[in-house]
Image 1 (spheres, helix red, strand yellow):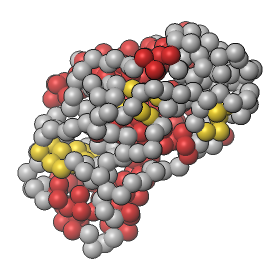
Image 2 (tube, rainbow, N blue to C red):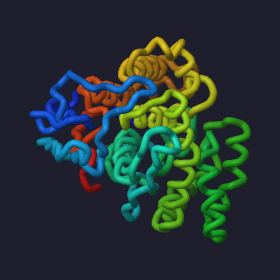
Image 3 (cartoon, one colour):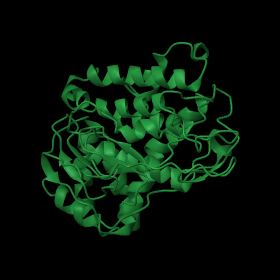
Length: 342
């Protein structure tokens, strides 16, 4: 797991506020786009998010066409500082979506890509998934690498390599297994013994099988647990999915300051009359956690990543509950267009 290394207060582009769109049960006079700050037709926990079906970017096939435009442009590719390599191998669309019957809310393949683009911006300051990325962030987690910020301390990097070795047993990444196992078992953020990791990881990222391994472990450790929390909380919107997914990536689901820990701080969930109220409180608790984490070694890095939470809060306030794209965001000072072709 990894957070961004930049810290600049969030300023969502004007186009986000003006064009926050959502699925509505009946045709509207504003082409399906909710005006800034209205957030009407919000679903309550256990309620439906609208009768329309989102079949693609900006189109509500349940009520007619609701195409939302955005004047923003992707002007920033982002930078990463530290020891390591920031690169991208051949483009990948990531993993697929999930049907509504599994977790109570449908996530299409296109919607999953939108979610992954958000995560990629938050993690690596680009909408293109960074499979070759490697960096030592000095955040107590050793090396951070790949599309989901797998770390040498926490064991997810180890799982990626172990799974990849089942697909490519001769990979030189296998030489790092003993060191990664030792670091994981001792909960150590040391990078001693991993000097070859940046080069070997970047080389492996040229292999489609390695990118597939990253997709699989990311879903297994973060997306699926996030969707399980979506079901537990009875969330019905794409912004709800993003809130759980992004928190799982950065915080993990278990342990102190994990997703479950933050949910427990919300008190009795029945007190929240709408999903928007529930998510507003969750994001507020997450923001407080980033600013004052239990682990002091993460405080500097986490405090610089509040832009990812502020971005989601602004989208929620604008009423774009279904993350209708194109959607312009500015979490750390550079502008990115979610829903654009990477």
